[in-house]
Length: 314
Image (cartoon, rainbow, N blue to C red; front, top):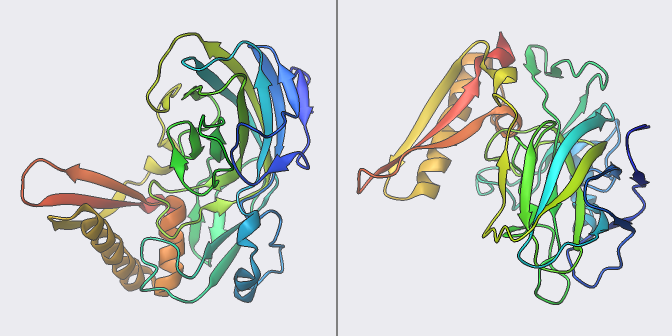
């Protein structure tokens, strides 16, 4: 347990949406540190023995639970909530799934697939993927947000200007995130913790993994942010950079088409070079490969690149 934390919020204090009308589970002062127990994106649906068939029984009304909300004294519309991530405490168990109808290449991979991960929560040594692959880990939370001003219950699935399902892998320990406050007290919640993810999360899931999070909540008065921003405390890809990258591209007048093509070409490359089945390559790309817009000014065609870290098979 965190000896420096002012409070602990247990994982049973969670919700499945964002709303200004949800009663806060805690009232804190700016500058206080809180220990959040978070559930994984599937709300504990998968176990070590789960199989692909279990993807079909996932309850989509209970995905991405968020622990909270926390009312921050003095937070008012126009302020920014400053979130400093202190520590992630992983569970050692994770999963990555292909969910039919979801993901960048949903039309090409219509069947459910599931990979269960086991990793050392103390050392965070790279997690095994098949007989040769080892994926470097970097814990972070995908769902981080405050309540929107609009009344009603808002879905946890899309990101929004006040946060939500951001899925930014660099919101890791040491990073500071700033969110626009739209309601009194901010009403902060967090969940959807990951052990690793690639930029783009192309199949729709990362290494989804239950863990606890320690963070400090503070205020920046009158910040008037239009959308989230964040600051990292150093380089963000050291866990992946050591052996360089393989990269494939998609080129054309539509960014989504180019993104899809760059991913498809990397799947083909991993299948040819490492003997992976296409669905296994797709899952692997989601947890450790990065989609990047390389060029968006030389009309009429744009370039999207997909970077795969060679360290996974080194």
